[in-house]
Image 1 (tube, rainbow, N blue to C red):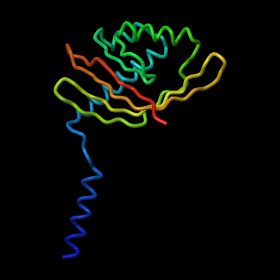
Image 2 (image 1 turned 60 degrees about the vertical axis):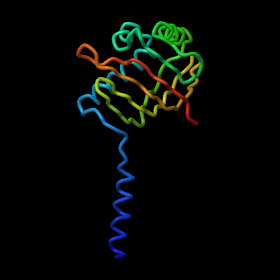
Image 3 (image 1 turned 180 degrees about the horizontal axis):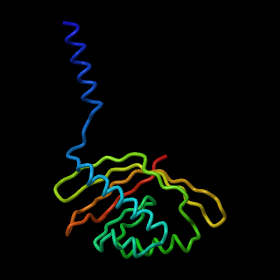
Image 4 (image 1 turned 30 degrees about the vertical axis):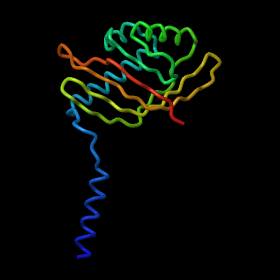
Length: 153
């Protein structure tokens, strides 16, 4: 009897450790989403408007890690230009954890990130946070339609 209880407890621990968060996209879709996410973030920090507009549609809804009002694509492009004018540059961009959920033509990507920005005086500033990013498959390709970012200590 004790062996059966131990086995059941062991199975319970295994099941809890292998917790799923819902339906995941296939490997190819996950890879495509991660490349798209990387392209959007890097385009923003590089001030590459053309590259940003290729992956982020007009209907963008963005909530940045600094709080403040919600932004559409036009405001996000202004924020991107302001970042470039500030003299800051991206030194490090890391995504330390990713979890996916797929519902039809929508993928939600939950992520943890770390960004190191260097200001015009050469001082490095690190921001770590979490994000919820939304991707939609439209007309044969994935687009990045929204995100909500926050800071973590």
